[in-house]
Amino acid sequence: MNAAPNLLAGRYQLERILGTGGMSVVYRARDLLHEAFGDPGSRVALKVLSEGLSSSPDAHALLYSEFALTRSLRHEHVVRVFSFEVDTAHQLAFFTMELMQGLTLDRLLAECPNGLPWPELQPIALQLLDALAYSHRHGVLHGDVKPANILLGEKGLRLFDFGLGHGETQHAAGLPSLNRSRLNAWTPAYAAPELLAGGCLSTRTDLYAGACVLYALAHGKRLGERGNQAVSRPQRLPRACWPALRFALAVDPERRNICVDELREAFRGRQRRWCL
Image (cartoon, rainbow, N blue to C red; front, side, top):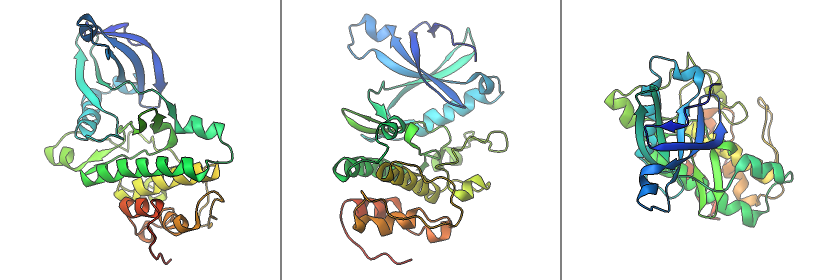
């Protein structure tokens, strides 16, 4: 992959790469305009498409679609985005967002091979489910909920990277969306079976992915390939939470008949009868 120019739009000085994926690269950058006015928060995260996608004719539109999708959300546990811009000299689109400090959950899992104790797991679970429930209420599907897209810092949890997401308002407005026949970027360990089989995003696919993250945090290991094999309750997970989580992990989406709000209530300790 070719590196992005050192300076974008005459304003953003790239410092280093924060993360890379199949679709994009995220840089740490200095906002020289804000810095000139003495703004102490002049550093931002800056996202560009990876070289393989940036050459596509609809690349800028797809990146804008992700920006517009995330911009519509205002929640303490969802990453905040700032502006979408195009460096005309290099024909490179990008958007800026808050620079988050902390540890992504995939790194946390690597440090906790036996899973997290309940007092540490519960607040993470509630914040993640809060973010998903809020997104769903506002017609936004994340599409790629996984530990690498969740950061835990001093200000709590942040859900980020809506690059595979879908928004009802964007669809209604005719904005471009991801062409899955051209790009298959779902993460198999966390994607719902129907999504991997070519099905559509839904609240149930986000629910399944979120449940897989919670299972991994409680068990220390991801769920992995299981087909129709039943899974057992992680020892660190309270018994009262397990029936709801088991529903959310159902292979058959028709049996995944709860919502994110109901799973959150179970993790808050509000018991309810769940029957398979």
